[in-house]
View 1 (cartoon, rainbow, N blue to C red):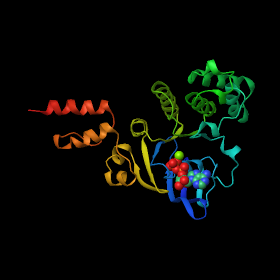
View 2: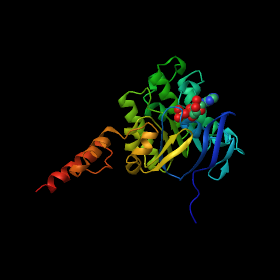
View 3: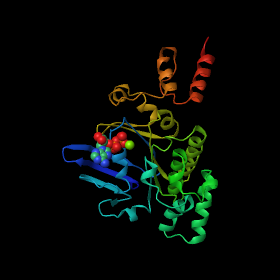
View 4: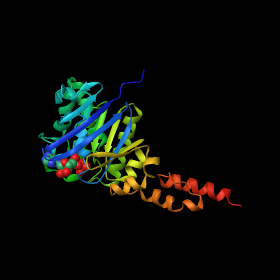
Amino acid sequence: MTAQPAIAVRDLIYRYDPELPALEGVDLEIENNAYLGVIGQNGSGKTTLVKHFNGLLKPTEGRVQVFGMDTRQASVGQMAHSVGYVFQNPDHQIFCATTREEIAFGPRNLGMNDAEVQERVEDALDAFELGPYADVPPAVLGYGLRRKVSIAAVYAMRPQILILDEPTAGLDRRSADELMRRVDAMHAEGHTIVLVSHDMQLVATHCREIVVMDEGRILAQGPPEAVFQEHEALARASLAPPPVTALAQRLGDLGMPGDVLTIEAFCRALGRLREARP
Ligand SMILES: Nc1ncnc2c1ncn2[C@@H]1O[C@H](COP(=O)(O)OP(=O)(O)O)[C@@H](O)[C@H]1O
Ligand SMILES: [Mg+2]
């Protein structure tokens, strides 16, 4: 018996407009505790796809199941128990009078008692260094801080499936690193992570599997080591491997492996090449 996938997508077609399908037939299984990266150029359908995972969008045709439950049969409230979605645009998510309230909203909605809610709020404020802004209306904060509030509000719910749509856009390097440290920790604790990003290095470093979207379809899928060697598919999707991977691939005739994803891995491979030199 195979374990039930976290998310199962079958023949998914979605049209915002009857003439223009945004998703043109997507099949995808995301196993529990996956760490999936979704990449593709603007307009390729990434956001439309992941909005199906928490029932914000329902299939025009086909089917999406979350832990076996058809999203068409579930309310957004029911879905919130297992799926957390951080919007690409934080202003589509933020609506409370204070940062503290914004973060408390989700845990309270999940039915936690006051003490539990309080604990989650303090933890999230601390995790995202939002303490100084706890009693400020999030709407007046700068973009990077609004983004952090939107992430903290979902993080506070610790959803079994966490979907992040371009979470590091607008964050400085330190905040982005801290965010990814938290996301990696949630993955290590058994959560399923879906990360939509333009940042190839980020996806290569953190994700275990990648889906390449192009014109509403999945063009390539697999571990980053393999996907970033699929040059034809990447070119069709107007994508390129992370710079260090591209460099390693250019050095292939010197014996550098083409599946290097990080500077650390590049240096290790270089060390091995040096040792092997006569
Ligand atoms: N609310 C909407 N109404 C109509 N068309 C939309 C809407 N949102 C997205 N689209 C269209 O659907 C396609 C996929 O968009 P989207 O899923 O946002 O792509 P991505 O997240 O990869 O940039 C694009 O052609 C886009 O213009
Ligand atoms: Mg998008």
